[in-house]
Length: 332
Length: 43
Length: 198
Image 1 (cartoon, rainbow over the protein chains, first blue to last red):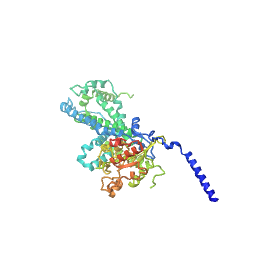
Image 2: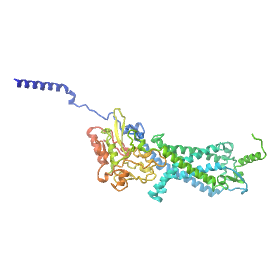
Image 3: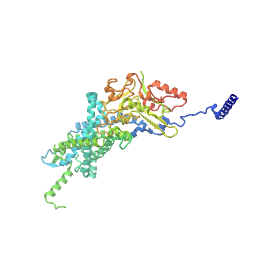
Image 4: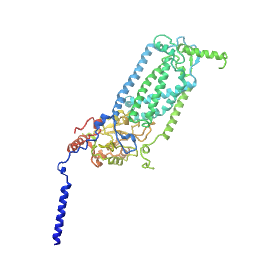
């Protein structure tokens, strides 16, 4: 009797299970629905059509690692390896070629009446100090900077990879730390000489006569001629651009992301090579290009005939001042 | 000449001081900059 | 000759970070240096995908091209390595790298950011294979022992593949064909100038 009951119970249980099972299994399980998990997923091509780089979320504190792929790095590589060297080579070698041709045709600009033996003070000790502070820093910055772009091709074959790497290491330290006295020098130049560097009508006349570069004309000039005023503004504005972009590079990712860093390097590189080209002309005219010019920064005192030939308006102003002083002009 | 020598001395002095100040204040190793304070190794 | 590549199957990556942990442990990577990382795109939204990213060992590597001291070299297997002895820590390789692989021990760039460190495909560096000097500077050299990178070996879902480019491309193609979907081989166009037609 109990066995019959047990059999009956298990039969009912089995039946119940079968009924439940037939209800629970949906009819659609017989034909599975097509699911495409990538229907809403992102694809690399699609993201690149919408934006220039792919960003995501990361779990590490280094925020810039959230950029998955930035193809702009390849474009920057093209700039640094091809575009910048071409611009630099054309600017610097082109300027050197121009200076050589100019020297061979025009020669050194002489003091026409010869040295008078009398001098007039052109730049005082502080002015000369600031100029040399900026200039010596510039020379080291230029060489160490050009090393980054051109050193591999020019110096590595001579020094070998290890020697070149050591030299470049020291050059980079010099470049980064000398940027501070250079920037200070540029700021002091701005404050010291801005009053003398504002353009006026004399400059228009000087420029119209081509600065006297060709022929024997003597265009008018005050303390700074138009060419020097242009040099002043190139130094101040170029120096500022190089300094700002340079400090962005020295403090990487403090203020910008990787695209900002690439832009900073491009600005820094282009400003720098043009700066070097311009400075070659400046050094030329201050040394072998013009008799009597170097003294203005060397000792500070220039020959009076040189001054009268190249900066006559300035000489007159200086003479008038000293005449006024010696005649005991009333204090104003 | 004096002003040139003074300028060289000033350039080197400012560079060295700037380097010293930056390396002792602003410079951070990535082991402390890119780790959270809880995870940072104490040694 | 095998040409080594990485492939991260974003449809399998579960963001477990086993690859990151394996790499850090195997090479005793210092704190703050991230040779490998997992990046999650569209986090929390439908279609979220995670990708494990490290140095892709590119064909015509941009890092090598911009290095001012030419400290990079490519091995016969296509692995891009560099010399920490020559590196001056200028940071240029990071600006050029499309994948953010180079890592530096110092944050500020006054003078140097320190010696650059990155994924070596577990192939060490210029020092003698499996020497202590090599281990101290670059980590272990598994390739010299005939082993593949540990990140791919440890991947819990076999989403990260590392090895001969043709072999892993074939594996990925078969996967995509069998399951019917694939979001593509992330980074292959940028790194190897090719895509896997699926």
